[in-house]
Every structure is written in structure tokens, then in C-alpha cells.
Image (cartoon, rainbow, N blue to C red; front, side):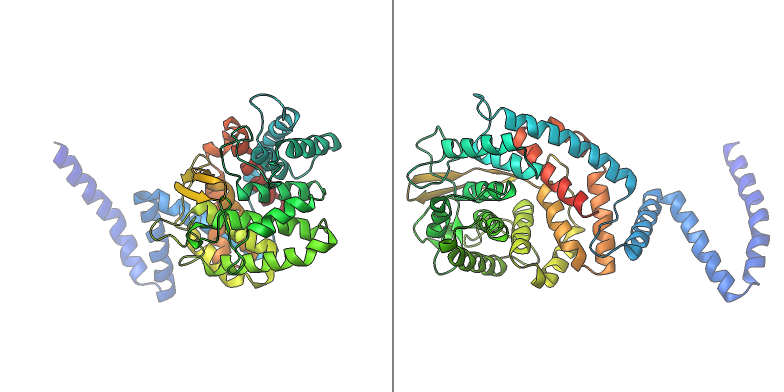
Length: 391
């Protein structure tokens, strides 16, 4: 019975479609071509609705990119509205973090600096509190910072100085000359890199992350004219040298390994975004080729707000043995790198970047970002604020 009904249905369908097909075959070539496209899209919609949705979204992205200012990212209003709500929630949490710097389970120098940079602005009371906190937690022998100030056996972290100097610059506060001198003294004199912890000139410990953050911190002070006059020229030389090293130490495409001089290991998406941002801080006018490589590589990346990376390495330095166990979250720096690269892309690269941005940001993990710990929230806050400033 079932087969008889199927055969009857097929005969009826043929009797309806056959005359239409005969008529279409007698029409002009252009009309038949249009019919093929329409029928193909209809068939795709029935068999693969996800493909049709993707085609529609990409077409809509292309239309917005085509009419937008090249320097602006035309995020859909609905997504931008959600991001503003999340940004405001994260900002409230960040202000609360700054109000509790001295609590027993409160901030570290690193997380306090992340909070300031994430916020982008600070009240006078916050500025005074952060300056006092950084001074209180600074290691006097080097005018630098450890990850956990109370852990006196830990080696100072070079990159925390970069974060701290960038935070001071964000608040329009000059750094102490000794704090700047620490970074100048710890830079490799011949190649321009910094290590995670202070080391003798052992190139295997050349760190992409530390070099990027030293470059960002010094560059931020320089751009706001917050350097002592006698250090300005040295800082210019240091940032130029560091940018040259970063540019020459990347892998294929716009990707960097945490330690480029060590064989093996994979590039880090998070650290690559930081490195690209650091180069934009230094010399954005010469970034077109690298930016286009970044945008080309972007289509293969899929991340949530919870994704992170680790690169474990034991480093024997000036202050004993240090261990790089630091967690790098991926989404914030992929977002920042994409915002930086966007204006230099072709129209098709910008279309694909916009498609990637909207798919990446319109997911539940971003909406739930406020549940993360403080420093995690701060980095995402910075990236959302940075993106919204360019939409």
C-alpha cells in the first residue's frame, strides 16, 4: 500500500512538473540560466539550510562593508547593542575590583593593571589607589613586579612591567625612571627581545609575549609624552628594535610562537593577537601586508570566550628558576588584532572578518563573560571596548 501511494504521488508530481519543464526549455537562455540559479538555491535550502543561511549572512556582510567607512566595522546594531550591555556589566565589575585592591583575596599588580587598561578611564580616587598599590607591591631591588608579590622566591615577570607602564599611561601618569630603566636594561641589546623573567642574553628564552607587552607599555608612555626627557631617546631605540624583532620572528602568516627560538611548539592565537597589536602601537603605517595575512588566516579560527592556552617552560634567570605557566585567553586578542587589521584588508577580507566577528561575538559564552574571574573579565572588557570604539 505504501509503495502504491509513493508511485501515485510520483506520477502526479511528474504530471505537474513536466509541462513547466517543457515550457522552461522553450524560453530564452538568460531566463533558463536564472531558473537554474533559483532552483539551485531552492534545492540547497531544502537539503542544506545552513549553507543558505551562511550565504545570506555573507552577502549581508558584504553589502555593509561596501558602503561603510573603511576604518569602521559595521557590526549589526542588534549585536552591538548586546556588546554594549556586556561592556557596561564588565565595567561595573572592574570598578568594584579597583575598590578592593587591598582586600586579602584582591588584586595583584598584573590584574590591577589589566583592570585599568580594560576600563580605559579611571576616577581620581582610582588613580591614587592604583599608583599606591603598584608602589606598594613593587620589588625594590629591580623596580619591577612578581606575579604574586608575597612569593618572595618567585622571579620578577618582565611583562608585568609592560602592563603596569601601559596602565600608568592609560591614567596619564608618568612612570618612575627606575621602572622604565628596568625594561631598558633587560632588553637583549643586539636583537631587541625581552624574556619572561630577567635572564642573561640567552636567545632561547626570547619571549613574544614579554616583548609585545614591554613594547606596548613603553610605547604608551612615549605616545603620551610621559617619559623623562633623558630616557625618551633610549625608549625610541628600544621600541624600534623590539618591533623589528617581532616582525622577523613570526611563523608563516601572522602567527607567533610564545618562544620563537625554541624548536617545536605551536603558534599561539592569543599571543599572536598581542604581537600584532604591539606592532600597530609602534608603526601602524607599514602594517598592510601583515594585516592582510592576519585576515586571511582568520577564517579557520573558531573560539569561545572560555578558550585559553598555556605554554609551560622552565627558565633559569638572574633571580633563580622561573616557570612560565601563564594562561592566555584567546578571544580578546583575536578581537583586538582583527580590529587593528580590518582597515587594511581587501573588501572580501573585510567581509570575511565581519562575518567572523559577528559569529564569534553572538554566542552564549560572551553573554556569560561576567561570570569569569577578574583578570579574565578585564581582558575581554578591553577587547569589547576597543571593538565598539571602531564600529
